[in-house]
Image (cartoon, rainbow, N blue to C red; front, side, top):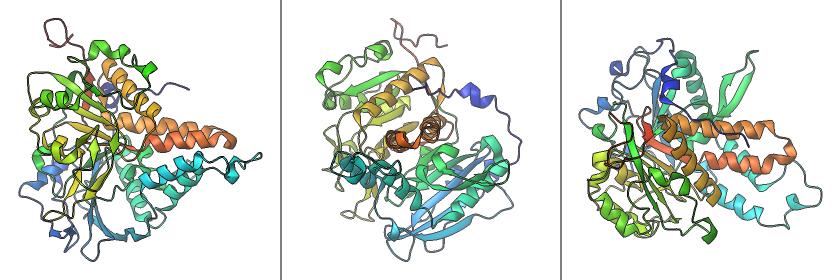
Length: 444
């Protein structure tokens, strides 16, 4: 398989798009549909919330998604394209028609692929059959009733060109796979419609929280620089793969942690310098803060910790576990907030949190970790663009293969789209080893 190219900050800075969009400081506060509520609580943007969109890079658009006022299955969307003369556009749509979450679709396909008795496992299988291809078609089809979003993306790209990028502020708790939005996102040279996936077409950054705080998502281009703080309890590894991290041993900060208690003690201190925090283990999803666990750590416990090391370093955090990016509406507490493992790290000023929307195979988890570390050790990478390039790589692989070989390529593409990132869209990551004096090797 061909190498997936890394995405350098220099490569993006070398692109000089035409200045077609107004600076984000000219954008008014996001406009939400009248009467919008978030899980039963009135949603008012906090004072100073214009900072959420002020001074972001040109070409950056914001999509706001909330539960609407007229029913728990109604979703209210409003989008803001940065053009000072156009009002924010709004759309309400019915989410009741969605058959299953992306996590459910992936789980069903994985289980069906294990069943040799299925028709698609026969002696002469059709090239159009297979559980992964069925999941792929279902994911694409569920967006059939929301063509307005594709229309908006086309207008954004037409105005911003190569500078176009998207922030999605989703406070629904529905784990909507926006990166897998499928629609007519462009047109070919001959004017024919070109269908595609949003996360392949544009870099996508997400924001979390019913009302994101401006200080959590400021407009600075933050570059996390340092080594890797690594946790892996080996719960997902075979014994013979204990040398998997030998290639990055020189980039680690301190010891490779295998105890979650030891990792949390290090995060509650602030003396270490690291750019990437990677957590690897079993992720168990549940709609309860005590049963939803990350390598055995309950969400309720993580939410109580003071992670001073995260606050000081503002690292990229890679939650490299199954379901680490999933969320739920906590109806057991006041105002029914959305809960997830992403939010505690964002509140402690992590510059980016990469998380996973479903169960993921061990091989893919390992590949993402080593490629991200390897690419960021070579030069700074823009995190959202790095993820977009991964999705594009697997999408191109899928489209270039014969139909008889589509099953595995479809699985890899869908899996690549499960990785989502919460950050400022220009957040960058640079991995550097420490020298013997504890200083960053090569740092000024």
